[in-house]
Structures are given as C-alpha cells and as structure tokens.
Length: 188
Image (spheres, rainbow, N blue to C red):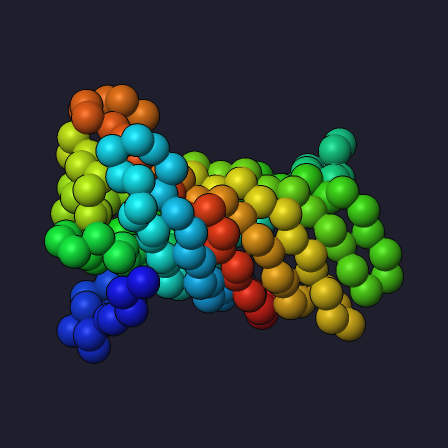
C-alpha cells in the first residue's frame, strides 16, 4: 500500500477552502480525524486497494424533538485518497457532509449510533488507480456504526464504509471505495 502524503501547501489550500463554510456556520462544534483502507471492489480493479486520511468538522447539530433518537449533523471534510496501483495514486477530495444518525442504545457514559450520509464533493482528479470517474464532481457516502463516550459523551469513535461516486450523472461511474474507515472525534 502506498503511503498517504500531504504537503503543507495542500493542507493550507484545503483549510482556505473550508474556512468560508466555517465562518458562515459559526464555530466548529466537532473535529474528527479518520484513517481507512481496504480492497476496491469491482472487476476492472481487482488487486487494487485504497486508503484514506480524513479531516472532518461539524458546525451544526440538530436533535429531533418528536424523534429524539434521530439527529442531523452538517459539516465539511478534506479527504486524501491513495491507492497501491502504480499510476494516478492520489486524489484530494473536499466535501460538504450532511450526516444522519440514529441512537441504537444509550447509557450514562456511552451512546451507540448508526450513521449514514452523502454529500456533494469535488476531487482533484477523476482517476484513482484503475478507477476512472466521468467527472471530478461526486458524492462522498458514509455508512457506519459508532459510539460516543467520556464523561459528557464528547468523544466519538466510529467505523464506516466509504463510497465515492457520481450517481451515474456522468458515466463512467465505477466509484472509489474504502471498506474500513476508523474515525476518532471530539466535540467542543
């Protein structure tokens, strides 16, 4: 697997792209960092594995009064995807994240949840290894489970499957997958 590398210039550009949404929404309420890896499903890419490094933030959280087990989070993310294929080995992705969560069970110090989200995204390239998308615009999708923990449930650990594709808006659309992503977050 090829190592994920981010230059300081790339990080500065990403932060500058994310600042407008932070200032519009107010203060950041939660920061997450994630790492993931796994094989890319699909016939054309057999043998290709992908990895991801994520920086996510959430600036809005809403808990439904009538259905208190449900909540919505809004945020943004920068993702650096890498592959072990010998060409087109890195892609940068900037995303808007609407995330829906359902509380499975809750105790005094833990809250287990299921989450699903899909947000519009822009990639630095339409190709990652052997996978070629029809455009650089796509949707960054998550499905996973996690737990909030700590005295005030201000820490979070989750595992998710990541899928990035353009929903067949501009074929081809094989998508990029990272089957196992682990994320650690802290709520402020």
